[in-house]
Image 1 (cartoon, rainbow, N blue to C red):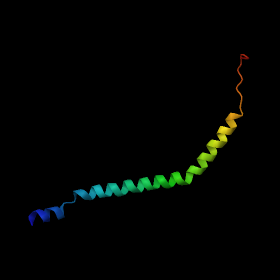
Image 2 (cartoon, rainbow, N blue to C red):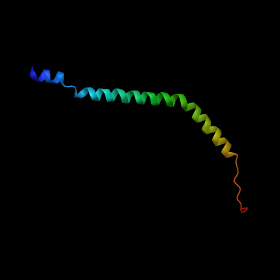
Image 3 (cartoon, one colour):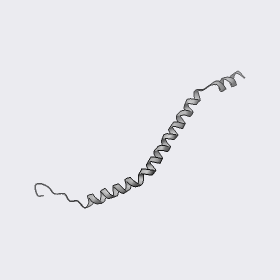
Image 4 (cartoon, rainbow, N blue to C red):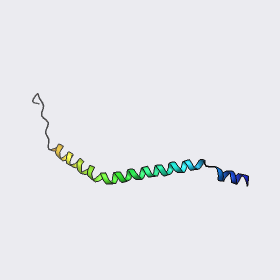
Length: 63
């Protein structure tokens, strides 16, 4: 019975649970941000790529 009471009074696992919950919240927030911003960044990258493809490079020495 003494061992069981010691197990019930031990709070060392509570810190681990707190960290797991905080880590899950941060990961969830990161996924939400990536989902909401992902379409805009893809569109912007496509616009930049298409603009750069139409550019030409000239050199000062005529080569």
